[in-house]
Length: 322
Image 1 (cartoon, rainbow, N blue to C red):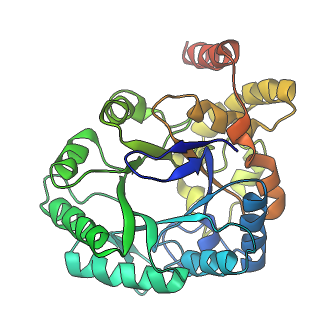
Image 2: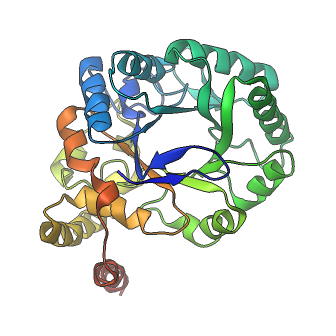
């Protein structure tokens, strides 16, 4: 796979990275349901075999379990070791309910635990997972702590996730931002107006998450499957997986299928390629829960949509809004 420089870093990343949210398993607020660790490791190894060179996880995924699985997968991988990206700032109580904590002492506990679970000496990209409440000085405290961890060599580069432009500016006044990780897909396009243009102007790398809208745009989701999602799968209560939005989203998938057939690809790959065509986007985080799923989406980085195909997708939005 071709690579691009991530923001101000020395990291050259592939267009697609492996996303480890779902492999955290059950037992916390934003779980995707039960998950086999063996399937997860097989999915990671398959992604690496296909040329992916970075893995994105977070301490909160499975309350540490995702990082443990990533650590096991990387340790047992005989090829070139991938870059490891993880996040801090979300903590869970005994019931798995999540809250935000950007206290410096809390972040320092998190980074030590992440280093241990991942089995690495330094984290390649360490990110604030979510900003605090608007105007909270905890943003400055948290970002200053990440800047200190970089100076100490515990992390190599630092970034943020889910920040808006105002928050990016506040962080940038303290220390340079390597990257932003926002949600971006055909279903969630809110970052197009000001966040992506700002990052492009400022040289901030962008690695988008949920480019397939958490499985909605893969081609495998149906109304029947959405209705049968496990109770411990957070998507069960997400408006995009329920009517009236579900029918609208599945109709979009039919348009993606038409384009996918021309390339011999999956609709999920088309959805990923659509995000990558934005000049502000450096890479896309793509999840897979087993090796078969990895085969179906991890090659999306080399799929190029032409102007006509992008126009077809935009025309569908105009028609559906009429």
